[in-house]
Image (cartoon, rainbow over the protein chains, first blue to last red):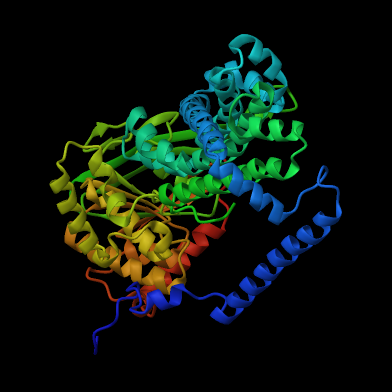
Length: 276
Length: 270
């Protein structure tokens, strides 16, 4: 040892600079220019060609925007949005809780799995909106019917992904618990549960998409409140521009909620990376 | 060295696994993995197990830890038979097997959380271990932010944190590049000199086995059984591996081991 050696594993001082390797800023700005140009082109041609078509069959951006202003000013849009979001959140949250718990049990205990897998798979494969007429017969046209359908559609992707997560916990990690003489309960809480979090988040992300579908279809059928009811109402009035307003709201809702779940995914499972 | 008391004792360890399906005669088929393995590890010794791949050396180590049940025979610690995993033995895995959602420090604290220690006691113990393996600066990094060598050091720190009497290491350096491996081997000897942990070390690297060990157990394959136990006479502290390699005695021992591993042992009727 003639001079102090630098420890091999010492992180570099300029690690932060190494991290941001990737496309240079110039390339990134080009990507954004192309993206914005694409948006302008699509909206522009929609506006242009939309004006040529009978407004009964198709609308166009500026007309939709005017309709949105009117519907917002009258409070109708806000009220419908509020009603839809309430249905969505209550249905989604309660179904997620049920799906996570059942998923953990089914994934961990082979007998629970054997008792339920046929039913879970059958129900997951069935387009459950098909039973909506029956649900309305049971619960009437009120909120219960909507909540039931939203929950029913949400619960299966959450449950199935959670169970898959439990089954996919690497045996090597369970070995760690066993080797350190952890109890069954400690292995479950300290290894299986955290290892399953990324799968749970995937289940929630898939669940949110299905929850929105369930909500809209239920509102179509009950046609009293919510964005779905608005779509039916203006469809019946042949007011296509106004009908597009709740449709675009649904799109924004879907994007917003999916992004929230993605954020939650990054927050709760930062070790997983964006590999899916 | 010879006077140190026996810490760990393997007595007549046998293990066979059942093969999937049945043979031509419709009988269940078994494969003998280990047959009548006997040897002792003395207090403070490092003993390596080597043998060609598939000779059951990892199985043997997992049996000692209690991760796999043995068919017959016994594992004794201080003369008392052990059958289940216990905190008297610490296990270092081949792939570090760190919990990916825990920081380096939290991984080290894993075993401590299973004991009745206060948060402060755990933190203090983790700090000691981080310092021992030279990773205090990386305490709050997640495993995927650490290099393979760093992960393996944390794996070692995790096993040592519970202060086991015996350290079991399953090819811990085999997945590392040559330079990192030599650094960690020297590191292990330094830590061993500080802590005097009785260590059972599985490897397929002859140089590593000679460099680290007081004695090397050479296993024959199919079924795995002790072929020879070789004393490694080099005194501690040992020179670094590249220097030791130049020693003619090192070369002789290496040649003997190579010969033992290469020549098939006479088959034993199953």
